[in-house]
Length: 212
Image (cartoon, rainbow, N blue to C red; front, side, top):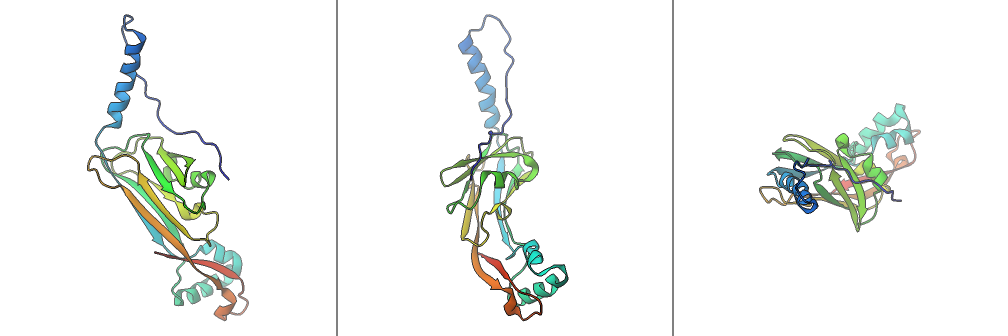
């Protein structure tokens, strides 16, 4: 279920003065500042976060607001915590990550969609296109030092009950040549039968995941 998207980016143009310049010279003059800006030194980090085991809003819809706290306590005794998160954060640790910097997000089991990812990319600074085995996410604005954007893959999942393992990798080396990639994984641990918790009036099944 993919949608066509338009790659984001800033159109950088150079005003060339001098009527005597030939067209090929103008083309070179336009390309040079673009390449120079792209080569400006910067350092970035890509970090993954995997926490929690289930979606609290899903649990609430199953058991109702009046019983959700009681069920949460029972699930906690089994080692399951609410507010599942599977998220990547890209941060400019020094310098500026330039517009047009791309990142590859792997999706080996096809659990994500372009439209789903567009809805969960933080700060609205990136565009998404599908590619073999995943997606390419490209920044459409400069990210200044200390700034960041996030990709919350959990909220974009088509099936939260399926095996899902993701990697986000920056496609260009920054000035320290670090391997700017990270992995966030989630594995279906169980479909918990809520009726087995022994709480009167509680029934249904809840998908619960673990981090690995």
